[in-house]
Length: 258
Image 1 (cartoon, helix red, strand yellow):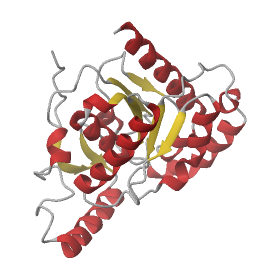
Image 2: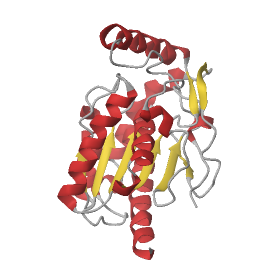
Image 3: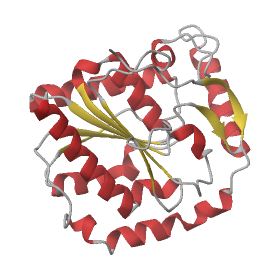
Image 4: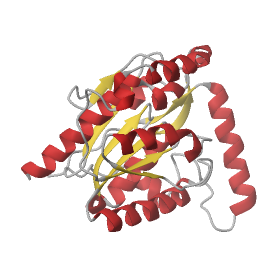
């Protein structure tokens, strides 16, 4: 029986987040490079299964190159999302992501793991619910999959993106595009029961300066993992990398157990 979905708050809400802390994201990057985990030490080795990394809001695959090469070092077959800039219609972005997932499945002959940073994690969960036969696990990094509660500056940027989408794609996209009220497949997928065959992991930080961490967790200790650091730095955090390696290994064990 499929698990019941967590409530998803469709309305965007401003949250008083300490955005100034994001200035310290560089410390997360420096700490990563001084950690044995970054060099593949002290973490489980991969089984060459495919792992797709998905960027956050306004980001591109470029900043996930670090994670890409690390995944390759520890024994996985990494893929970048190839969704372009994550500032477009969510349905369109998930369509692009699904093409990458399908290609990764075909090349490796097995299910794919998805790792999404911030809004990229929302896209990952949407894709997993739409194509559970292709996805083994989803790991979200500071991803607001229970509702959009973010710093006002982030919501202003989202409004800008929504208006741009309306101007350029008004004839082909729903009028509520880029909101929780959209009727597209990608948004509707966030409301359906989670497939039990797909393992969930939510990694978050309470010092997140962008997103309210409370909408980034399941409220289930076996799925939620807190780390120290910044929102932006979750993509370059040694504790996050350690958790990713162990959760990918746990997903492999789950598949082997049937």
